[in-house]
Image (cartoon, rainbow, N blue to C red; front, side, top):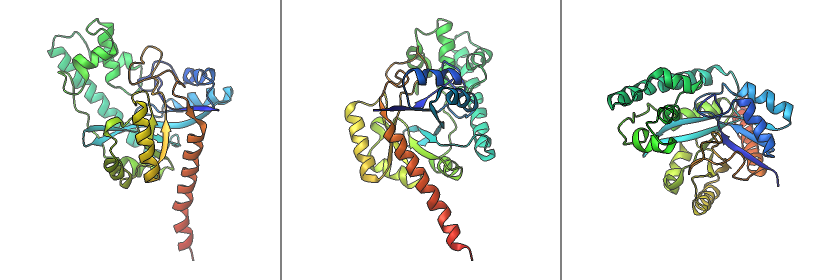
Length: 289
């Protein structure tokens, strides 16, 4: 059976390796396809696409969005996105600017706690990519303020910790409208225990197309439960490693290709997208004289 990985990251956001290297590793892992889903950016897609084409592995153009949720924050995976679309890129420019402001606020809080860190250190760790808490965590590890990434979040950066800063977030309907307008599909990432059927039904009404059921943070029982909910509600299913690099696995990330996601799941997502596109076009055609 051929496998895919529909959730991974590069240095365009908080991953460890450049986009072309992600493509090479996807090929080495024997994947038929992979989705590059960097946080709030498609900046790595062009480089990844060139490498993927030369290697004969399919690249799905993706992006990981963050939106408001009843428990705080929900991550969404947008698939089949265009590159260079003005509306999409304008939205992502705004979210990255908010990330920069948040990073500065986190650094200020860390400094008040006596941690020797500067925003320039975080910018260096980000290397021009979309800035996030993992970049701050890496600097904390480098400086010896934290033992490892998990310790950095546990001690400083996680929700409720002393350097945590709330992220300004759009709503799910806002992101769903944007993704659908450019021909994409929207999947809820690693819902875990937040994925009650009632809550997922509400998300579906707001524009959600599917659920990431297979993820390193999901136990077998969680995957089964979410898969059953998706079937009952007519939602697509997806899965991926959430790979950020070889030094950052833990409970939330796995090796690239390590989740053994069937190619069939991607094919069904693709079919769903095609059907949605036809349904969108059909009313306009009927309205023509």
